[in-house]
Length: 217
Image 1 (cartoon, rainbow, N blue to C red):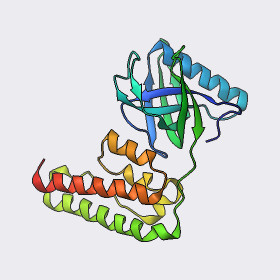
Image 2 (cartoon, rainbow, N blue to C red):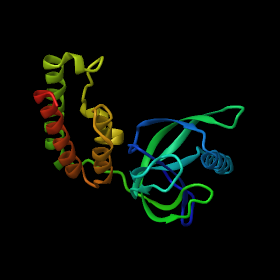
Image 3 (cartoon, one colour):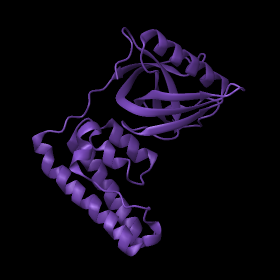
């Protein structure tokens, strides 16, 4: 994701979840400030002959509606794929998480949340990371199989698979999207800059999920 030249003032959409690269994001736009944000995003996209985008960050404290929230500074650009606008001004969007970014400065929420952002590099998988990725794959597969065997009522329809080829485009985010993990762990994964650090996060996630299954919590 390449924002516009100069200090990129990015329209921001704080949410109660952390959007990950490659993740689909359906949204319903109803607040007047976000209706204006959508209009501006689409207008900039039309001028640039590209897809509109905005930034998504996890709300640390507060609520999505009404403002006054405290936000994390590492988030993901959301690419607008489709827009369906209704007669009353509301809109339904389908978006996809693109690259990560860091907020370098929050601007006044006028007329909607905005920030100056800098894109973060993609997390490259090095040869030295391969053993830990394979070990993580085995642990994830073992967890899913244990759920299916001991708690079939908790198993999703169609057990997720964890193939190495799946991490080529979006790295370990692709596997994360198949796990029932909360916003805080998703945010930790988003903030990590190396594969090794991301594996550490997911190791803890798998350990916690396994404990919940085994002890019924």
